[in-house]
Amino acid sequence: MRALVLAAGFGTRLAPITDTVPKPLLPVRGATVAEVTLERLRRAGCEAVALNLHHLGDVVREAFGDSFRGMPLVYSEEPEILGTLGALAPLAEFFADCDAALMVNGDSLCRWPLRRLLRLHRRTRAGATLLVSSRVDPAAYGGGIAVGPEGRVLSFRRGKDAEGVRRRVFAGVHVIAPGLLSRAPARFSHVIHDLYEPYLAEGGAIHAWPTGRPWFDLGTPRRYRDAAIGGGVAPALVRALRRSWVAPDARVAPSARLRRTVLEAASEVAPGARVRGSLVLPGARIGEGARLEGCVVGPGAELPAGARVRGRLICRRTAGATVPAGSSVVGDLLYAPLDPVTQPSGDP
Image (cartoon, rainbow, N blue to C red; front, side):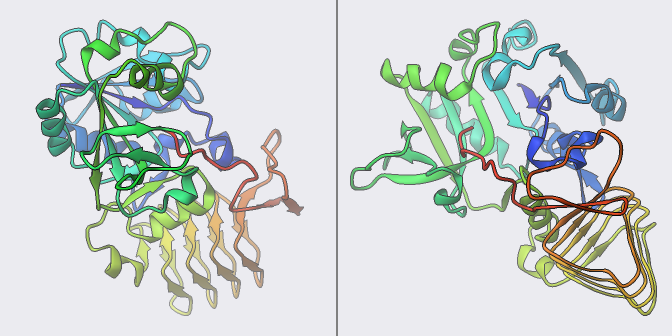
């Protein structure tokens, strides 16, 4: 069993954080998203994992090297980004001897039940098996996937569904049979439009297996914040929502107050500050007496003393930094929306 972690994306909706930090290396309670993913794959018995690289690829490669806790890593460089299906074509030799290949989104966070998913895939002999969430509202993700009573995928498009059909949201993992892997073209292509939909039209079987485990899409600043505050992949999700998490080397003044807040490495909260429902990334500082609610504070950003901010992404304003629509600049800080104008489709 081998896997591909999709790590080449630009992370446009998370800019300007992703101007310098690739999405797979975003921290969530002290561990990067990619570390969580690679550990789940290692525990599931993967003998090797590939990561496709494009945006800030050297940063990803440097973070992990040639192996992860003894599991070999292979890197697939994409001078031009190839998309979710095209990424498989350069890895044909890597997957040559596999009876099934896993493909995992590099910007999703979950305690994926990979062994169960693989068992279901092998039992049904489907061309592909997708993990879907039974907890997430499909309306927030473009309507989701239409799944029949027997777990068979009926459609990836919006439309009127027959009785017994459920809409589910893709939760970041595919298992793909060798016969379908061989169809990946050596060009930019999309796994839904260029593989799954034609395969369904031919009468092929694609299955969906639901999980109730917490799943997070880190595609926007708001969703990234909610994943961190919600406990990431912690089983005790409800309990985690009530408390803060502070990295061992973060500093919090005795007179500061935190509520449902995550402080990543080397961050700091000054005396008298109040921080609620926020994610503070590595090296950021909340000034004395500041009030912060529902925010994401980018790496190294320093919120001035006495500031009052609610529901914004706050980043350092550096030369060449992306300025999302609806942003404002005050001094050397950029205040951006938590929800970018462009929203995800919900497709795998």
